[in-house]
Amino acid sequence: MRPSGRTADALRDVSMTTGFARHAEGSCLIRMGQTEVLCAASVETRVPPFLRGTGKGWVTAEYGMLPRATHTRGDREAARGKQSGRTQEIQRLIGRSLRAVVDLEAMGEMSITVDCDVLNADGGTRCASITGAWVALSLAFRHLVRMNVMKTIPLTGQVAAVSCGIYKGTAVLDLDYDEDSAADADSNFVLTEGGGIVEVQGTAEKTPFSEAEFLELMRLARHGTGHLFAAQRTALGD
Image (cartoon, rainbow, N blue to C red; front, side, top):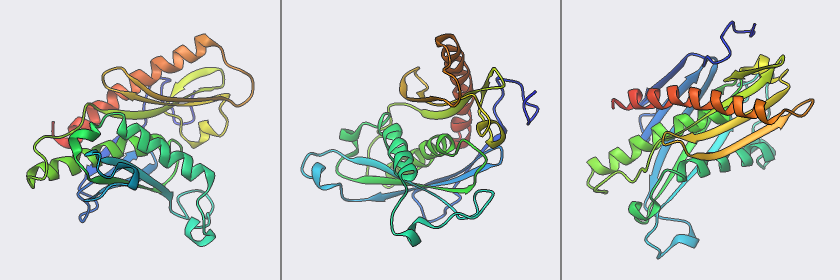
């Protein structure tokens, strides 16, 4: 029995509230169980120096956690004067995941930054950030089309992410903190609705896991992201 009482292939309750950050060109507050992340997309009419003059746009992300998003207070990274390695790794992952489904040439020379701020953390914050960031990015593109800045939305598909792991010998979907902290193996799957794999992160916490177990984790991830893709479309009214 999982601590939450969920079956092995069950996601936590998922909701996505759009327009939460009213000044952003696109925003989404995503809730996955007790994990809550605010994703806000901001448009700028410039690109990084390495893209100037290429006609291509850029999509990137930043990630952070509020001090009391976790059980004990964490220091603000701004107060420490630098980001942690974990923060840098996660925000690069979010940016890569979004760019995997964007036609940068069709954007023209503009940038969109998606800020992902964790309000409450109960496991799976990077996965929730990716899933919610895609909704915020989609809304920003729709805003640009309405404003006649773009003719078409330069998205090539959907992207979402979910965690899977081996908990007490059983492969389970969408780990919360209680499971994540005690899992035999922990993994994150970033997938597209067309079946593509953007990134897989998998770690054995105790003993190595088998190929058969990995394939079961992949099956669960495809099952879970299928529901997340549907939730994204519902949030957008599609």
